[in-house]
Every structure is written in structure tokens, then in C-alpha cells.
Length: 447
Image 1 (cartoon, rainbow, N blue to C red):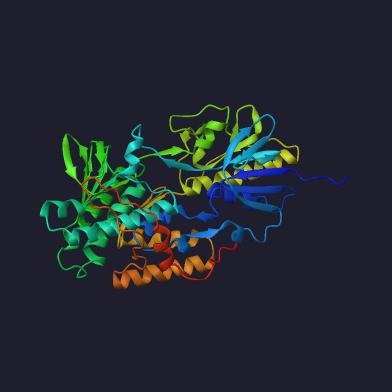
Image 2: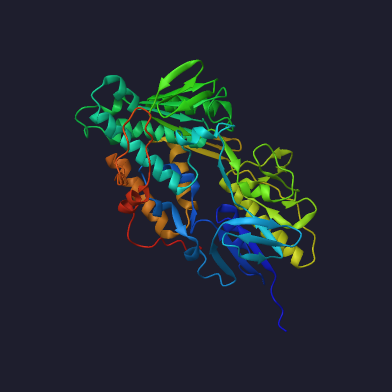
């Protein structure tokens, strides 16, 4: 009877899961990669899809296409519904059961509303392409509603935008929204001046970009304010609904509120009999395994782990490093060797604020302004998957830079309700993205 290669099941096609899959390409294992979607997403540029700068095909690629040349992997589009750690099986939707020798959980994170989950209906977050398409439609329709509104107070509410959370995503969204209002949409409306739109960035802490050095945070805030963003720090949002939000004892009318204030780990972590932190992340060993079960590996945003006494941040470079390390430890286990502890190598932080404005922190190197923006641009283009994606994104950014235009501004789908507490639905948001996407298939082959 022929020897059956060990079965490695990897849940999640994000940075950690895909990196682990590709790192095991030459090993004598069978890999099953499971994801609820059919694509890998370059999340650092997701806000560009939400703000109509790029289409979804520019920052995502089908997993099957990426892994088409890797013969030891099978891709399944499914959701995990149960995990039996001791029996080494997991159950997928539809009742299918898979056995495994090693399981890698890299299912990422979702939005956290700090116990106010009902806010999600009024302040969507940004984690998936569906989220980005919903936000794009919501943002563009706000300007259309303002154009049609005759009541000055109601018009001002449609032109009021609030981004809750002053991390990199919130800073990038707020800066880009201000640029759209002041540059992209100028001279396109007859009854409103889009430049009169109010964009507020709300941070509960004392400064934006708290993971950056304080001087870079101050420079980032100054660049945001030059773009016209009103930065509010030191007090959290205490309530919000479809018509606005409350902060610091005041009610502010705003028909478009975007949530970028917190993340929670994927619910899959709860399926393991393992300790978790307040955000739902699994507290793993230094080897990135569940305590007492060395065949259960956790990587990416789902893992709570420290390196050199400091928590590993939930960013793409850390997730990729974890994915490679998990693959190395699986390889070691199959060869009868001991697993090694994970050591995070900090390659720095980057955040863009707007046109020719960004901040970069790389060890002792601190950059801001134009130089940081060019650094940020080439770094993101370099790490995109596939030659075609890199060229298309670079071309789109070049055109946008010289023309101030954004290519993906088509609105399709049923018109939203316009009643006093109406919510903007996104039943056909995907269709708007398909109008902007190119007909060719993304070239996301491994390079």
C-alpha cells in the first residue's frame, strides 16, 4: 500500500494562510486550503477600492489562479463549522468532514464595536471587498442626495462624513475622502460645492497613528488638516445611528459614518478549546501552536503572541512572517525535529494621508510628506501579487495623480430610501465594481 502524504489543512487565504501554503510547495504533503471566498485580497489597499480609486480586480486575485502551478494543494471555497482538535477533524458547511495531520488557522479578523454591535448597520467597517463596495456606494450616493436636497440642514448632513478610529485605515480613509470632495468632484455638481463637505476623523486616544512615534503622529495630523480633515482626539463616540453620532456630550448630524476603530478575531478561534484574549485571539505558544496540541497552528490576526516581550502587531508583514514560520515548524515536525519559537522582524510602519502626503517609520528612519508618499507607493506596488496587478495599479495611480479622477465611480443598484432614518443598502454593489474592472483575468501567479 503506497504511503499517503501527511494532510495539512489551512483555513484562510489571506496573508498568513497563503504564505504558509506557498512555503510548503516543495514538501511531501497534501494541502487543502479553505476560504469562504475564492480570492486573496491585498488588504492594505482596500480603502482605495472603497474610495473609487481602484477596482476589486486590481487588489485581489482568485486563489486557484495564484496556486495553479502548485500541484500539492487543493482549494476549497467553504466555511468551517466545527473543529475536533483531538480527533483531528473539521466540519465544513454542508456536513463534509475532513481529517488532518496539521491544521493551520489563519482566518483573520473582523470589526469590533466594543459591545455596540447594533452600530454596524449605521457605521460599516472595512475588512472585505463587499465592505469596500458598500462604502463606495454609500459615499457616492451621499453627494447625489446632497445635490437633490433643498433643505440646507438636511443637505449639510449628507455632506458630513465621519471616520471613527485614528489608525492607519482611518487616516487613509479620511484623507482620501477629503481629496475626493475637494479635487475629484469639483465642477461636477450644480447645486452643491463638494468642497464644503465636512470630513471628521475621530480618535478616542490622545493622538492619531498611536503605533507611530509621536512626532510622526503630529506630522500626520498636520497633513490631514491641510487637506481639510477635522481631527478630533481625546473622546470616543458614545452613540450613533443612521442620522449621526454623539461624542463628548454633543450630537453631530452625519449621514455617512465609517468604522475603523477596532478589530476582533475571527469567530473560528472560539471553536478551539484554547485560551483567548479580549479581542478573541487565540493565546498561542511561542511556536504558534495551541498549548498542548502541537498539530494545531494559529497565525495572522487570529494569533495572540509576543516576540521579544512585545505583542506582535496585526499587520500584513507580521502575518506573512507567521505563515512562513508555521510552514517551517510543520516541516520540522514531519522530519522529527523540534519546532522553533517565532521571532518577529519589524520592517516598520507606513501610512498614506493623501496626495503626496504620508508617514513612514523604519527603525531610526522617520519620513513624512512627499518622500514618504513615494516610499509608500512603491512599497505597496512591490508587494502586490502578480505583474498585471502591479502595472494596473501603477497606471491607475499615475492617471489619478495627473487628472484628479477616480476610475471606479459608477453607482448601480436600487435607489436607497430617503426617509429620516433610512439606511443605504448595497444589494447590487458588486455590479458597480464590475463596470470599472477590466475584462482580463488578474495575473497573480507566484513570482
